[in-house]
Length: 116
Image (cartoon, rainbow, N blue to C red):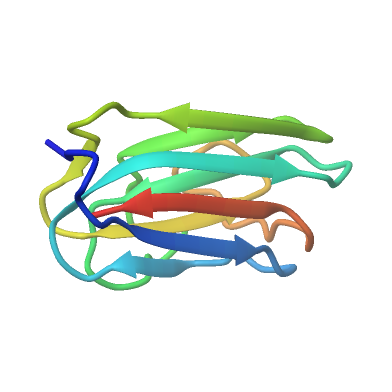
């Protein structure tokens, strides 16, 4: 549970023309909200992993995938408990939905999140 006085950490990324594989938090934690601003003409598939290091895209299996339409902004809020990751929080962005996809996404989508 996050009270109004709990200090959460922010994460920000502007995608490059890669899979943008990244470790957000190297230990267990909760994701509270995330905003995707996809100003590109390409749909994105943002994948989250329960992993302490950057994922091996195409090999590691995401626990959740968010589709973000082209030219769209979407915000997800996970409430005061958040979306729990028991090991760690990692993510990647690809150009197709399958868990095994390794298609590089395009540059320019903005991602921001808060976690604890």
